[in-house]
Amino acid sequence: MIDWQRVLDLHTEIGADGLAEVLELFLDEVETVTMRLGRAPDLLEEDLHFLKGSAWNLGFRDFGALCQDGERKAAAGHAEAIDLAAILACYSDSKAMFLARIETVLAA
Image (cartoon, rainbow, N blue to C red; front, side, top):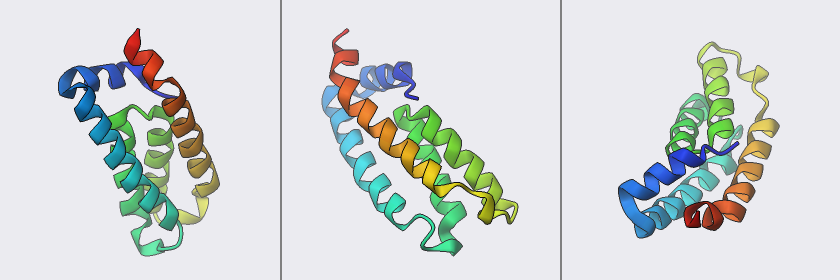
């Protein structure tokens, strides 16, 4: 669900303070977009693209993959085939796992 190596690499690249800032920004921006997901059909493809990039940047592997799949479906005109509930559930699960384990992973 989480690419912990990506998280460790990011931590090495930008340090603990930088990672904390990225995480705060990530959570703020992603939560804003997920709250409107599906409510603005004309932005669905763009929103999923944004979420995909944000997710992969922070190591949210499974969430990013679901967003990529949804983005492709939206681009092909098949927005009705996107399982928004699964995307949102994956984000919630990924966020919970990340927050529960981040300190342990970085301390190892």
